[in-house]
View 1 (cartoon, rainbow, N blue to C red):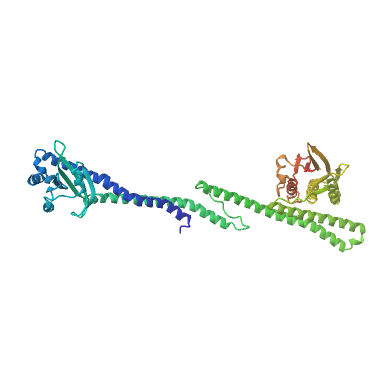
View 2: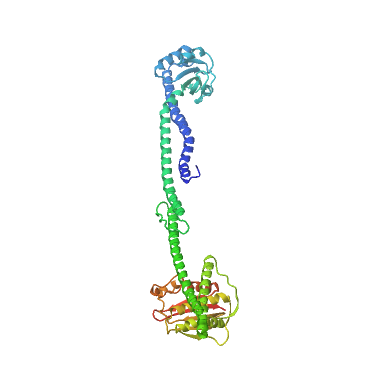
Amino acid sequence: MLHKLQTQLVVSHALPLIVLSIILYPVILYLLETRYSIDNLRYEMEQQGNLILELGKNDVTGWNDLKSAERMIDRVRPYLRSRVMILDKDGVLLASSLPSDDNRKGKVIHAGVVLDAMEGHTAWDVDYNSFMQARIVDVARPISDPAGGVIGVLRFSHDVTEIEQSIIPLRTTVIIAFGIGLATALAVGLFFAQSLSLPLQRLKAAVTALAPGSVQASPLPEHGPDEVRTIATSYNQLLRHLRKMEAERRQLLANIVHELGTPLGAVKAATQALQRGAINDLQFAQDLVVGINSQIDQLSLLVDDLSLLGETEIREPVIRREWIDLKALVVVKCSAYQPLIADKRITLIYHLPDEPLSIYADEIRVAQILANLIQNAFKYTPSNGQIDISVEKDNQGTKSFAVLRVKDTGPGIAADEQEAIFQIQYRSPRQRHIKQGMGIGLAVAHRLSEAHGGTLAVTSELGAGATFTLRLPI
């Protein structure tokens, strides 16, 4: 039961008060008895003693004569609430206000307070009296002559039972006060426990409802203690992120289906044409084979992009460096796209250095970056347009970079979109009419350039084409 947070909070509020009640209850009663009731009783007994002294100040025989002592007791008996004893200087009982003490007259009273009083000190004690068989308050004060010598002792004894009876209402009051405090603590603890456990229960239900592939759970209300609000806010942010990821996943799936359908349809049509006799026309057959090869290259690039996308979502891509000729790699990649570019009547212009440009990089990854940049330029460059590809070396102090630029004559990219195009599945709202592409090629190229310690950036204006600049450290 204590494993529940609500129970722990209630116990944490109530337990300290219970412990304090157990400790404070006897302490309070002790203080009430000793510091209030008994002190008041002592004061009252001292006043009675003063009364007796006032009555006997002119009759010194009352402190050493039995009959005189009894007369003194009889005179003050109506004003007494305690047992009063008059003893001589040797502690012998001369008179007592209780008839039960008559058989002790003439005998020495052996009590600690009496012995102290015989030495000239007023003394008091709370103890059990063997004769009265009860707890008593015992006070003894010395009676002195004008010269300061002790001539007798006044002893007062009072049953504590009367005090305890007077404290009973106070005990009841204390118990009620502690009970009210305990009930209040339980109510406050239950309130705070509910205020904390209910949001956590809602969070548990929401997380449970958030099954894999399902993002239909409702957002949590963001109220309550700061920590609970923080958890609710984090959950809501996670829910929004999951919904966004789910939307991107569905869009990516739709794009993959579309991207696979186009080349597969073209390959299917080419093979059917060959089966129907086009193989007998050598030139036509060669064109079909080139087209098939081009579509297979498109499929290979798509598979490579998807594979790398999955890899980079988990960890940094693995780069296996070796010395490669960037100039030669550009020529090879452009040659692979030459049939598609020529078919669209796009002019491809090279600006390459005379000498090879060697860089220490991963050839497969760099080839993938080139393929995506060329594919992007091909996709957005209209018929009769132009693509310029240049390669050069740039020295900056002690560092050298290989710089590749791919410039097209497409519609251009707005300034506010030039950062976003490197995000996964981002496609410009202005270019929705272009159906090709899944919006991952530039994102993959950007990640690969950073993995090489390089950069990939774009400069563009609407209506003036775009230039993608790849910088890789040599």
